Length: 619
Ligand code: C2E
Ligand code: MG
Ligand code: MG
Image 1: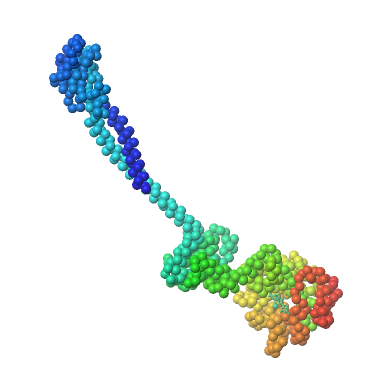
Image 2: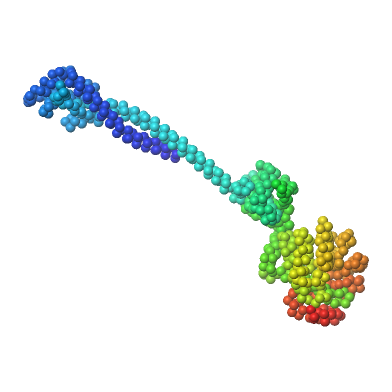
């Protein structure tokens, strides 16, 4: 294509050049002919001494002289004519020209020159000159030069065209590279990654091998960006990319898919090794300047199997596994497996419901009564969270609290709960307290004590009426910060209860290390004590331990009269359970308030409950 184009350009240049040259060559040829004619005329006049005489002779009717002797035409001079001053033709020598004066050759030319003698014009000599030889030589030269020049120009054009084509190709190549690589890390970007995945998958199908796909998402990277700014966030992404490249090696594809997500494609040989390699990438902190940052990643892994039809499906599996790793709290690798993913899908669904509820303030608090075990007087309520989806489905706190913890929403939910519960109890009779559950994660922020103090101050509730319940879970790991915060809460005047005692990581060790105000014996114990004397014996000992350590004891899950009287006989201080009432919404508390509740308890206990109606009504 390019060659044909350049050939045309060259030919065009040649034609144009030659035509331009032809005009000049014609002029040159005429000039040469004129010069020759001059020389010839001078020669004729010089070689014909009798010429003045011929021209001076009177006009006769005789034919013009056809032979002047020595003055014979030679070379390009084809012939000539000589006229006397009156214009009569006197000499006509072999001029093979037509009467029109134009001969077969283009460069025959006729030149008239005066003949002078003694300073006088005595006649005119008209010579026919053939300048075509000279013209042809010039033309041949012009064609040669033209050809050389046009070939040279074409060559130069060709070279410059080639240079431009090459630079255009280079520009295309680099813009293509730019389009396929991520600007922050320089790694292949998502479109390039998906293409490489499709290629790897089709090769694997042809070679009967497997492809291992990993999707890595940095945990809580948005917070890093918020705290340190996007530019440091970008530096971190670059450092992660470098580590990934180094750890994975050249045979493994690493890509930066978007934001804080990376992708890795490994073949069958490297596949399993990658599980450990990728997790090791985040073992060491990232150092730059003054900053030392620890990062972790959630990793979703999927391996192509025989039943897998496309690379898209493989990608989807890895995505599901990644979501499972994230929902499960992050900092882990989850390999795709249909059962695991189904389980995590459910968690994921609840996570969405929790997120929506946080956004739209859709949580509700219900309040379960707690009574004096012996007198059965209402003493307090326990605030329990309730969540109903838009479809009317009720999700229990046992399901959504762990999810809220996983997705980092528990702090805000917990503080909201405390504030609501404080507002509620502030409107109840003064002898009635309020218990609120705290999640272990609420101790991690370091703000818990100040936030609680603020809520107490804002709602103007007597802190002595508030009890915060923690489970044995808070005792795992580094207990010092938890105990320190619990002590600080106690010094605000708040009571601290150990909830679900006997089910979790029960250890007598922390019973003397922290001065709990109350032990809440888990309902499993109460239920087990129905038919298991050992459970009953243990229950009795727990109450004794409580008394020994100056702690009140609440029995949870009191569903029957037998439960109620048993725990009262064992010396429990408080009872809580369906026998005395399930958790009820705040609207029920507000309308009929507690006076009706006194009746309610009386009904529940078959008229045995002794509720201080006066106090309740006054609230
Ligand atoms: P929990 O703190 O031990 O609360 C008592 C749970 O036992 C409540 O379940 C209550 O409805 C149930 N219950 C009370 N009496 C009986 C009974 O006689 N029989 C039976 N079978 N169950 C009874 P719920 O409301 O489903 O709460 C479950 C757990 O969820 C709570 O156990 C608590 O650990 C957690 N939770 C509830 N609300 C919150 C909250 O606001 N924050 C935190 N962090 N956790 C909460
Ligand atoms: Mg509780
Ligand atoms: Mg409990």
